[in-house]
Amino acid sequence: MTSDAFAELEWRGLVYEATEGLRDVLARETVTLYIGFDPTAASLHVGSLLPMMALARMQRFGHTPIAIVGGGTGMIGDPSGKTAERQLMSVEQIDANLAGIRAQLAKVLDFDAPGNAARIVNNADWLRRLNYLEFLRDIGKYFTVNYMLAKESVKRRIEQEDGISYTEFSYLMLQSYDYLTLFDRCGCTLQMGGSDQWGNITAGADLIRRLRGAKAHGLVMPLVTTAAGVKFGKTEAGAVWLDPELTSPFRFYQFWFNTDDRDVVTYLKYFTFLVRDEIEALEADVLKAPEKRVAQRTLAREVTRIIHGQDAVVRAEHASGLLFGEPITDLDVDDIVAVFDDVPSTEMPASAFAASGMAIADLLVATKIASSKGEAMRLVKGGGVYVNNRRVGDERARFTVEQAIAGRMFVLRKGARQYHLVRLEDLPPAPAGPPA
Figure 1: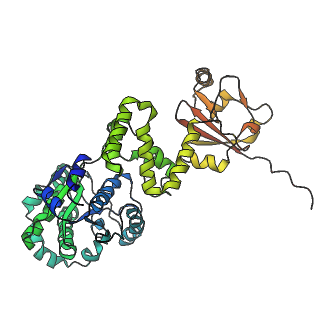
Figure 2: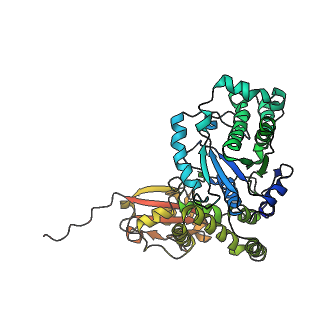
Figure 3: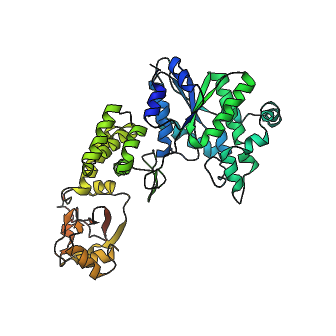
């Protein structure tokens, strides 16, 4: 089935700009297409999910997807969307990063699909072997300086104080050469990417027309932003990575669950395989009962399942229940650490909680949840303080080692979401068992 691919992308809001005639091409034939992925880190992040899902959608409509990992262009750096030149990486760094990226792409692409199996290629295979003089003679002569200066990504950088280096200025030619190479080797006639890639993509299509007399196409998708104006994928804790060692599945789930009501329907279209009827039903839920966060929960489940698997969804939802659920004094310390691995923590001597224990006001000040005992008292009196998920109603309350989780930890909460762990240190050794 190929006839609805363009309409599907259009309905999902994924067509920012496309070359003339692409809709008709996708309606009458299957194509080979590609998207490039930048190997500047050992893991992709959630910003990479949009192109990953775009390739997967096209594959589901019968087209053949290619993911390029830029082992060659990554040595240069793409100036598109950048205000300063990126630090160049060594060949060894790039090659090490590629291994993790390949595994993540395999989570959404089918490399065994009969007839249109996905492929991953590394443009280092041809770019690192280029002869500079031959490249200038065979490729460079088709790019006038005026043409390159007119590209939006170049114009923006020239206006910056530091300008643009010749290294990055050459990037457009290298990406165009990628498109030409994939056209020759794989019959690739469509390149997709973010809207900041339009100039690079159309330059490649123009090179194919000049050198091969053939028609090649481009389609770019909108750059993802949030309704609040925050860059998508950025949090107070930093980027949200696809690697579970860099961003835990729990934090990954929470990132999607915390999506703004204004963004959730858009993200359901962008980042899930849910069909139109399902998404429209969830959109109705947002309008009718936003406080239930049904759409956000569905988004978090779907994306976490795609990237980390169903078991990770079950664990993340169990952990999420702990955040706002019943008292948690009977949980294992390791479970608590896993759930709250990204919240602030304070180590305190267990002796401070001995005998009559530590007053709640002193505890809040010591952990900087409150700036003074007076503020601490007001927080407690207002019902905004929880210890181990149990509201503290008495400003004279005191806490002992016996009340700590496994005798080793307290989970403090101020309001709905501000958590703090208190770890008890210097505990006396466990009593020895009976003699053998």
